[in-house]
Image (cartoon, rainbow, N blue to C red; front, side, top):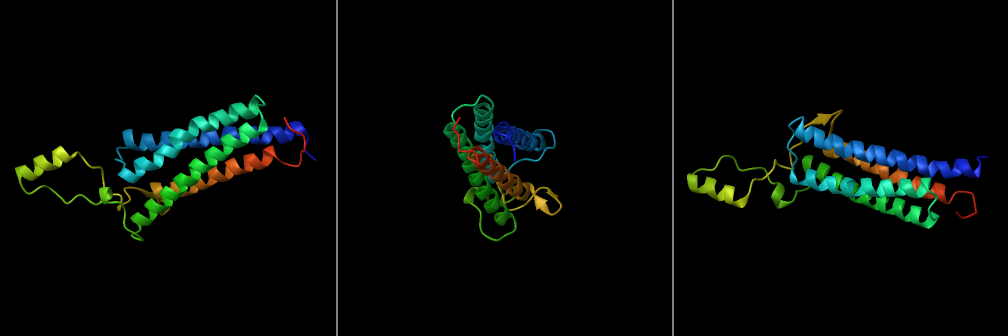
Length: 177
């Protein structure tokens, strides 16, 4: 039977893992974009927001567990992180379905219609703003999964980790912090 100190360390260790994995994920996405040259589509950019918000929340959860802040606050932070990752999971599943042609993507993600036919059409497209690549075509796959497909797995694992941390906070110990 683990000691109370060992039980308390589990959520702190999970918080550290959540920080590291979520930071590595967003840094990896930025690396693929800026170093690898993979331009993100509109849905790819939207899938980054749960990480942009989640990393600071996970850092706060880490502080809450390491500094022994009230258990309810730590649980709230883990729940917020889990919610962000579940939202990201939904976006990633949606984007994966768009890539596989299971459903239509948003209008802003339609494939570019090719080169403009006239100088006026070119000027109009420039005034409308540059559009990223189509959300319907995966620009990269590894083991059959695109960036969105891998994000499904990572988001699900991170959400599960946060929920396990909450469970660890309220494990078999009935004493409060």
